[in-house]
Length: 195
Image 1 (cartoon, rainbow, N blue to C red):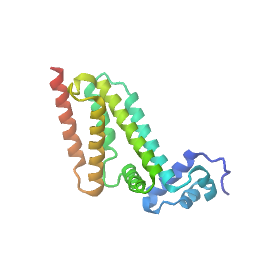
Image 2: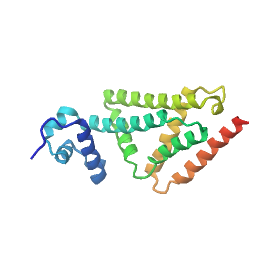
Image 3: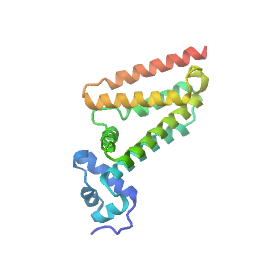
Image 4: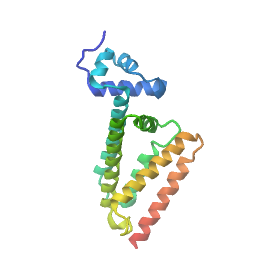
């Protein structure tokens, strides 16, 4: 028996994530989401006008959860803050990365859908802002005076997404090594500025 139309968006998102995990993003449909949630397809359409809107909501929630956790975590140790941020990014950097597969599929779709492009642009800006907040909290110990936290946030966001893209395209991408060396590089920067 189908659930009543009072199903939450969260339950539909959970169903979509299960569908993607079990069958891949290419086989995701609103019909499959409805079946997985035990509701009619019309109920899914009530909450999400398109598959892309559903995917965007998944990406947005994963992104916001990750950044909120990072920004709201207070560390007295600068190295620990950097390590946690890199660990979070590394967890989404592999050949089967659910998050980046969905994100990059949406990026491609957005080239033909101006509304989706605007939504993704706003999401990337929000990520840049989160990173700028974190870098501002790290303060002068981390950034050289000629680089603003806003610019550094954009650069780090591009670096992390670029690493994830490479990992998606290369099963043998050395993500552990790259992230370990990136952490060493950043830690040396911190040590240099602490002197």
